[in-house]
Image (cartoon, rainbow, N blue to C red; front, side, top):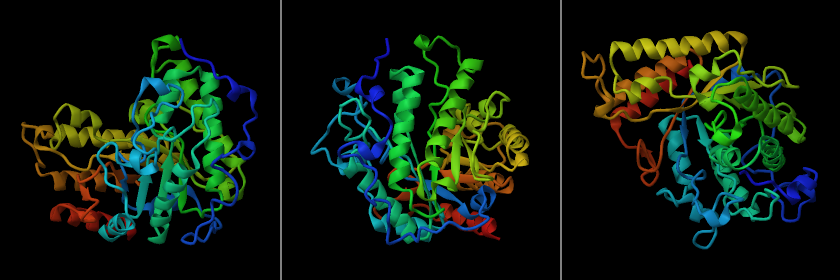
Length: 393
């Protein structure tokens, strides 16, 4: 049985009144961001300028599970500093030089997935730890110092909430989290983009009483996205016009292009994108990458997205794309492409040709080295340089 929230449900969702709350107090100022919002700046314009992106994966969304801290979903580890969580899944501490190298490599967007339960007090109020959000801000500032777009979201913590609380409670908690995040960063320019959640929307649970992809499941997904948009829009500062990304149903293309998925109603005009992951997902997991079926399937997935969203002036944010294709995922039947770099280039070019924003999923020392501060493979570097150059034209 899911637990009920106690004090949290009795307190108005006003971050500024909570002692030690991460929000308020002018925390959102930055010497690296001018705080300006461009006039007539649309989500479509933003999508074009974002170029090729990369994820700072297995870093701020990393967490340490422990049943003794069921409410927050995270255990206190080490000295309970941001860096303890930043490195608990094998990442190194993110340095300014790491972000400098990403910019030099040709990336113009960094997606920072964040598990906001880390360092959170087990007090029933979902108050984000001020040191943790300040550490996220440091990375945002490193990106802005490089004139890059930055995307931050709620990552994995959305799944924790959905699995442990009733829908009404999850919506309240999500609103409270976004109140704090939005308030903290409210004075940043439109180079900072908020993405509501990650892959958990639509997650079925037996005790929820509904089947996956049912009307009720879609309603839950739509309500989560609406709470995100409404909360950010009313939070003040630049958030009334900030570009926002609604998360798809599991970020799955077939589910998200279903007519039951609804984009949130937005008080701002032309400021919304939609997030999906992995254009070639089914081919990857069935080891058919590189062949005709892979090309046809990937094209059909892009066509679904184009017809449902791009045609309606809603840009598609492919928040996670495969960065390295190992040989075991390449088809053994007449492959047209066999090398990881050329496969990556094909997918990135396809996404770019459709006007989507492709963002490579990457973790420490995988595609990009966070200690050497460069793309590890020379052929991969050539791909990013060329694809980014074609998008920029």
